[in-house]
Length: 247
Image (cartoon, rainbow, N blue to C red):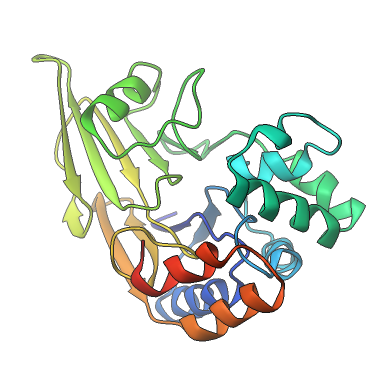
């Protein structure tokens, strides 16, 4: 295996997912991994799940995926209103088979022959930490048992580097680079369906194993159509608005 594509935070945006998968197919890779949050916010959860399953893409459990599987659970009622309304709507859209599939997703995926792992948010007992600040990366690094990890969750592409000798964590915006030497590295791969780095284009990351090179790839898609789907479904307006500015 020499080249991986890592996608995350699709958030039921099938238009963005189709555009990203088309770009991956054009450029080629040996494996695609999805780091979670397949559903939530967007209006096409069934289509996203079906597409990932049809292509047999390994997927992780994201926090929104977990929320959707908590049927008749009072924890859903404690979610922020925008999230709760989306979760409740999504629960009505999915078949029992799709809900069972989501519920069966793992919190971590390891590539056995290679020394790196994938999580949705972070390693350790607090898996939904947003890895976008040094202190958040540090919390994850304390439990990261492999030299290299990949995550999503924050919707902001970044790379965190841990130097054990000086106990320091550095965070850089992810573009294209050879991964620097560090005791531990975590790559946040960005978001397919709801970027929050002020760039509305879908984002994913290629990783070339032998070269240790990561590349953030941006893919334009029909944002207006995705917004229209959200509005037609009666989902919270903010979920549509934030797509336009990548926020």
